[in-house]
Length: 51
Image (tube, rainbow, N blue to C red):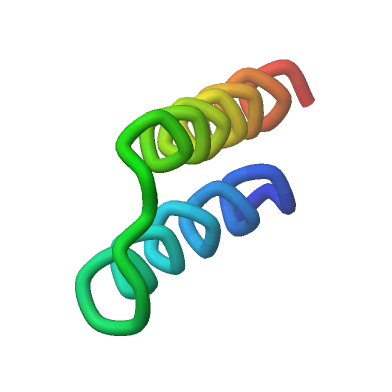
């Protein structure tokens, strides 16, 4: 598994856990962090495919 994919999955999971159980995040921040996580996962898939 690529490092970008792992970081994206960890970021997405940490946003979910933080938003639900620790402290409610503002909607704009949660959306931005989810978009970064998805972009990292997609970038990891592209890099893995080209190698």
